[in-house]
Length: 505
Image 1 (cartoon, rainbow, N blue to C red):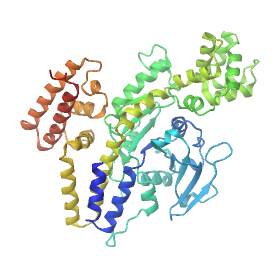
Image 2 (image 1 turned 120 degrees about the horizontal axis):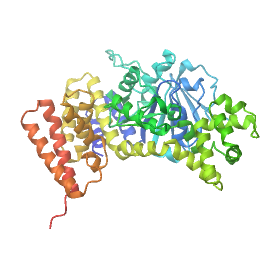
Image 3 (image 1 turned 60 degrees about the vertical axis):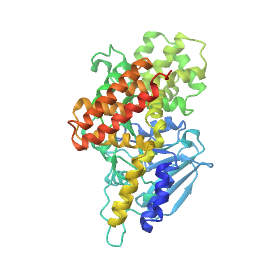
Image 4 (image 1 turned 180 degrees about the vertical axis):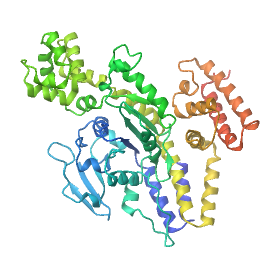
């Protein structure tokens, strides 16, 4: 990779301190993409983490562990490591229920973070970082989250070159390169602030549509009557509300998708069993009027006198909530012979998790190398700037400019242009900003051009026309900052045209 080659080449030309920083950048370039799951307290982050991993390992009840940053990564042996701020590590086994122990048995004020290693296929391509809820937890938890994920602003280095973050914390949890932000029904002002605070890598690059998406969790708790146009349908109401939230949170995020984390966790992590399927069959046999009355509220559902034991109903409620129970009963009534496995898959489909995974794949996985490379370049720049040596800073700056001038670095320039426009660093007219975001935020060519499903000749003609327009804009009428972005967008359209044009005769 070009960025890795740059780091290798510069290591012998910079100070020992900067060279050590470059070594960390190189390590992270070779590691899986780091995705932080962030949001407010009680938004269901840990439940969603379990669903994404496909294993119930992250504690979901408020306790010691939920006040710490936890990194879930691939390992050949399942284990938990407590990493202390002084660099010490203490290894723990997972609890008997397969989760991180609720109580760690240590002074958590001296803990930097937790590393959880799992023999899990999902984690071979992505490290998932579970964070304490922002906005409502104690100040120490929020501070740890911001510090370990790169959102805290470090004080300037003193004359000896020391800094205020210990080496272990800085190197082991240098920061998230991508963010999955969890919201519930109401997006608040501090959600915007939290999104702005979560930065990519060590370089304080703000989260944006390149490296951030959001989910509307607990979609089943939305009252359809409160959402105009929902026609009384919960999922339709959640979809409409997600679209509204997307317009509020953009351009900080690429999209907002509805999901029911509890159902997703139960269906994907082995929580839903054949005994649960049989209990749901028994509920499906109840008189419809009785069942509909029971489904009015959780209290009625668990206290109503019926043939299904109250304890069994409570277990179903804890795994599926009322929406999941209602959905499963409807499926059973339509298909009485359905197997427990097929019923689990139906619940998984109803949770919306697959759409979230697909979007993660499009926004994160498909461009993981580009995201990591962009973050790495930003980190290299920050390291050179922090060195205090003007000659070293200039040497690194010149090397980066040479790299970015190469044709193969176009994707990096596009990510940079997108970040500049999304953050407001380069002011563009609204329609042009939206076009830059569309071209830079999508992997699908039809979506990039705003013409999903259009035939190749139409896509080629449109790409060529827009390439010409942006080249003209760059030369006539654009400010210097706008011109820099315009040249990148022009090249993006030109490359798309080359990709989709009909072969020459």
